[in-house]
Image 1 (cartoon, rainbow, N blue to C red):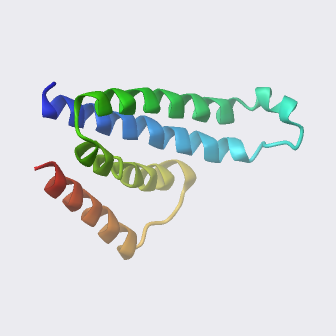
Image 2: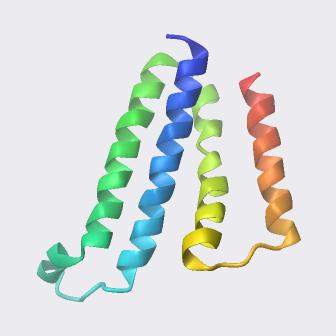
Length: 113
């Protein structure tokens, strides 16, 4: 399998996983002690579903590439989570968070070369 395809599939999996985290966060507001009431918590269930889909793509990528290539790319999920948190949860970014995102991107680029 082409290395670029594996990298792109892994990045796609991180985007899906980041949306999964976002929906888990939104669904966490409606968690009940009674586990049987959770079937109505669509945001929580959708977040779990997105994590499962993300895992399928991740496992596919692992089938065709080395773990030492695929696993570092999963750190892109931190980038997506930060950006989604600003957009959808009105969280604030500071200089250290932006610097961290830059370092993550730089690190992934160096490892995938």
